[in-house]
Length: 378
Image (cartoon, rainbow, N blue to C red):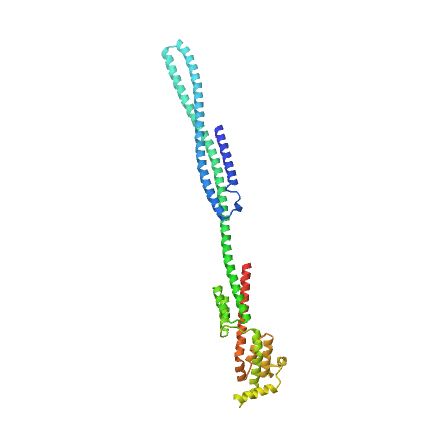
């Protein structure tokens, strides 16, 4: 029993030292390791567990062999001791029988000795079998208890190591997910910056009245990819571009409005009656425009709609253009009744409509850029 206890204590000491060594080496500083180091540490831990398992199995086998040898030696020593005692007892009985043999018949003495020997051997066999069974049963119980304790300890240790490995794998997966998310965020961020840059370039070209607006639109189409909002806005913008790809600026439209207003006023003064066509009608209209004072814009704005003439409509449209309200100007030009006035102002009205449509597209592009930037912040 002492040898079993010593071996068990030794196994406990070795197991404790092994756990401490793993905590100080392989399982140390796990939170500070990167993904590559974690993979290496997992492989190293698996190899160490495999090697330790083999070593523990060999040590357990050696321990069992020593325990069996020690038990056998004690069992043999005890049996020899008992045999010596019985031999001494037998010798004593034999000496006593020798005294009896001397007083009795030799044949009677021999029969008695034979009976005594037979009884001794029978009793010895019974006791020997009883002792053997008792020692074997006790040894089996002790060994079973030790094995169960060691098995429970090893199972608990393996579960702890499995939990540690599972934690390492979860940590590694989290790091991998962060790396993947970081890559996706960088790709999305780069695309958003390219789109915003393309939109800003397009808006700058429109505001400057450059002739290469079409080039900026084509570039932004490529950058936008499958962004349906941007592509739809660009498609609508292309429909409203002037020949050559330029977009009239507000200042250009305001400057041009003066001439359109004057030409329209001349046509309104000519009228559509007999003799209004041809050079004579044109000269007549110009004379009227020189003699008659033009309608003031603010006065026209205060008139009721039912009292408005085409000249009043032109004055109102001029006021709206000057204040930057292009939709109001388009509405007033749409109410013109004279065919000549409509013809003179038709191209200008189309340019106003194109400018307004392009401004709406620019607003949509700005809102889309703002939404993309907000999505990156979230």
